Length: 233
Image (cartoon, rainbow, N blue to C red):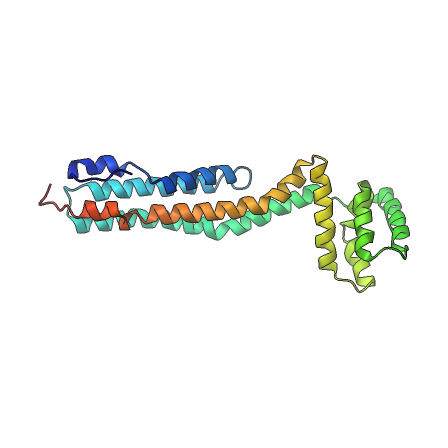
């Protein structure tokens, strides 16, 4: 951003964005694709538009500094509230997104297919040379109905019967299944793997963007702009 020495240049500078804002917006656009396409980009635009509007307000040296400051603060407060609403809802958005993916990829077998899968799985369970973790790794690796059975509520039934940690068993089994599916080109599995990182990067970029945009009224630009009162115009 250029440095302003004359009040007539303030409005021109007011339309400029810092490199931090530009970079953060780019990350938001990239990471929100598919995971929050209808949310984050819109809030990012509100933040950026508010920052520019606030800077233009600060740059209007025809008005008294106190009035410009108050007006800019109100503009930024509205954008900050929109960001706060987004921040408060993104956990739910992520939970729903992951739940939809899980429903799509984890499909317990039914009917005759389930009976056959359970019979085959119980044969693997009876093997004394395999730990319970190895049993489920074997079932997951088998693919088809066997792997889906291994990830159904049947897992908890087996874990309870063996006095095993069902949660740890499920985490390991699901991770192995998702990795296998991703390696085989399953797009849903790849989305499940990528989602946590995408949401983390999205949250970080939005936080950076919000901090930069809502902070323009405390910037060096604001200090220079407010140093010009109506008597200087």
